[in-house]
Each structure stands twice: as structure tokens, then as C-alpha cells.
Length: 303
Image (cartoon, rainbow, N blue to C red; front, side, top):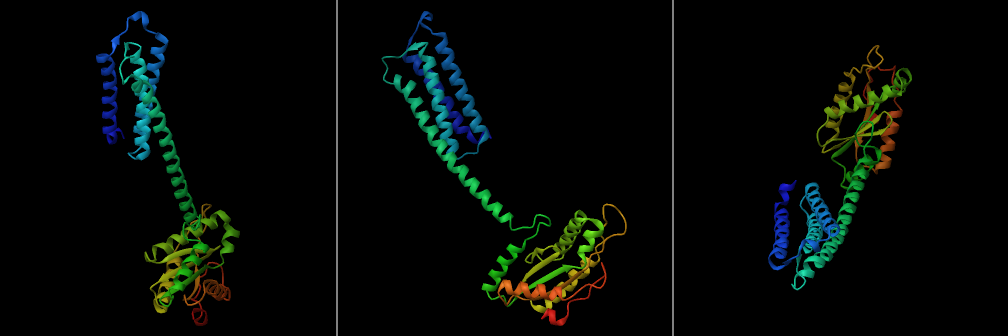
């Protein structure tokens, strides 16, 4: 990361060298008897610490305003400490730049650090808001099957309905006798069956189609740009694709062969009414036996 901050590193090195050169050239050398070891150690340690923080800040952050002001503040504190350390070896009391080098850089460093912290706080708030927006978006997806949930489906239906919905169909799918899977194999195995079915459905849909888990073992597929005849063909294709699935339970035994029943219609009604009618159409049909292949929904239900 330091290679992206070569300019700041070079400026810091030049400023440090210039500070030492100013004291060495224009200052008067103090005799060793006037040296204060404690002040020298404290100023040198502060300069070294500020230098380490300066490098660490550049190493851990990408180039941006926050990084620039953070580096400026730490660099100025380093120069102020370095000036105090050099002042122990060279007397520059009569020089006009003496107070600027010692105290002015420290004051400027603190001001730059305050600005950097303010900008950093604003940066963090923006990142938190972005994560919250992503989290709210992710909440619209079912955690088990990783497809859209019912709320997301309703939102997309509302959008399609507002745009007319004449050339858009909603397909509702239900796994036959799924409660028997949970009863015979356990809910954990039932969850795995739902995941397998969702994956099969996804593999047999177009990129423009939207698959959502509506509730329990019921899935919905929003088919934009699809007429009724094409939706019927796709629904039967999905039914056959799921019927070919052989899900092997973790405890062994005969594989589970889930089957689907379905119904669909154009998105020509308000989303709540549309979903209510499709759910009723599915509920009127009961599967013959567990895991048997179900026939397509009746013509009345498909209307």
C-alpha cells in the first residue's frame, strides 16, 4: 500500500531533512553540558512514534482526503517533535522560524488531525449507511434457499402491475405432500429438499425470470415478457425437471422424489388479489399420493 503514497513519503522525508538542516546550519551548537537527556529522549521518542504512526496510516489506508489529512497531521507532529529534539543540540532562539518549527508545526498537526478525524467519522457513517442499505436489500431474500422472499415478490409484482403487466405472467409452484417429507425425514432434511428444488428451478429459468420462495414449500416465478402459452410450457418443463430430481437423505434409504403442482396467470390484477387467487387455485388441488407425479393444474385454474 505504501507504493500509492510515494509523494507523501518523499515530502515527509524532505521536511524532516530540512528541519534538521535548518538547526544544523543556522543554529548555534550547544555544549554537551547544556544537553538535557530527558528532554532529548522524550522529543526523540515522540518523533519516532509519530513517524511510525505516519507510516502505519499510509500502509493501512488507500489514497483519499482522510489519508492525506491524517498523514499531514502526523507528519507535522513528527516535525514538531524533531524540532524540539534538535533544539537540545542547537540553539536557534534568534531565528524567525524557530517558534514556527517547534510550536507552529505541533499546532498545525493537531488541527490537521482534528480535520482528519472529522472526515474519518463522516466516511465511517457513509460506510455504515451503505451496509444498512445492503442489509435491508438482503433481508428481501430467503435465508434458506437464497432466492427472493414474499415481500420482494410483492414489490416486483406491484412494479409490473403499474407498468401494465399484460406481457408478464406469475407462475405459482407447490411441492406435493411436503409435510410428509418433514414428518418422515425431519425438518432439517426438508430444508435440504427445499434447497435442492430451488436450485433445480434456478437452473431451468432465464436470467430475466425471478424466482421467489413465497411461503413454506410454495415458490413463485415472475416471468416478464412471457405470454400465457410460453408460461404454460415453462411450467410443465419445471414440473418435469423437479420430478427427475432424486434427493438422497442423509440417513439413507430410498431417495426423495419431490413433485410439483402449478398454476399461473397474467399480472393483470392488484398483487394481493393476484396472489390470493393463485393460492386458492393451488389449494383446490390435492395430490393423489406422497411423492407421486402430479398432473398440471386444471384449465379453470390456469385461466
